[in-house]
Image (tube, rainbow over all chains, first blue to last red; front, side):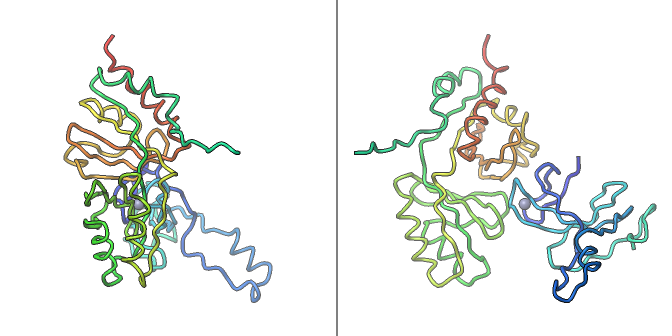
Length: 101
Length: 197
Ligand SMILES: [Zn+2]
């Protein structure tokens, strides 16, 4: 069981949240993007082994979205930060992949 | 002429079972119908917070997971950084909504009557906390959750607004109507072990 710090409600168990997939994926302009670019936007994810930026929503609580940095091997939650803000720096951890910088 | 629909609590069919609780250090009861208003406003919006507080005769709580008491039996529960649940006597809801609308005119806000959406249960008694702990993962120890604390969380996988109103302890559980019968049945089952043989 993960415990995630909702930025508003405080620490709550994973089961109160909805997972929202990888964070920081910008939607391209459909008119200016070819099929390959659109497919990349829709389907391709980094599948990180290491520190992963992802979106969570506090479904059973305040119903607000926020971003989390989670280590996909240890499940350690390293940072919680608001939607629309850049990914924070995190220290490189043992076992991080290329995404872990 | 069509018959007038009569509002009925979703807990009506459990009335006898609820009335039989209490000998076991924990009492479950259905609260009478009450007014509930969902209030959204930007606390940074100069004056909106104070205007809403004044209209309710109280103060909107800004600390997460807390509730405050307002005038005339109303209470204000924190739901989020710009969202509150305002609860009070059933016959006073429209007047309070009007007073809030008037006080917040010109600000970015929303006052929504959600009174018909929820049922409120009271769980009280020495064993109430132990019963809740069977289905709620929050830390309900008095040092973490005391009178005046409120939280939106899950109880037995149903979304609830949990509000502690007394030290005995006494909890108010506000739940969607469609979950009320399930949640009350679950609580009655969870309370069964405390029933005297
Ligand atoms: Zn929350």
